[in-house]
Length: 98
Image 1 (tube, rainbow, N blue to C red):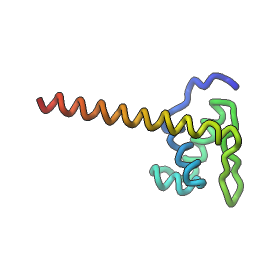
Image 2: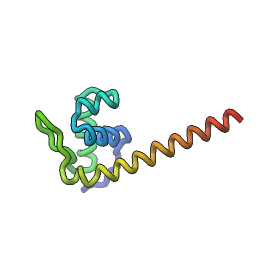
Image 3: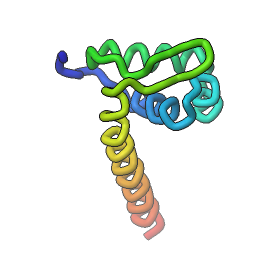
Image 4: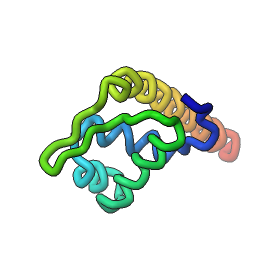
């Protein structure tokens, strides 16, 4: 596995939604991206970390064993990130109002 040097938050969010919804199209609808943009994000993420995360067929999307092992960690990191951003936004808003 090569060191993931250029993984984006967008790629991680797309991976989370694809894993949750088991569909590139539905994940795209949820995030506001086209199906092809979702597919590209997942492909780029897989290329960046050097691991296959999702098995694609014409009818279904399945996480690989690696994808199953990684998605929980990614979800946890995403929750922490969004909580911290919300907390910072509230703090900035409070300071501006004072």
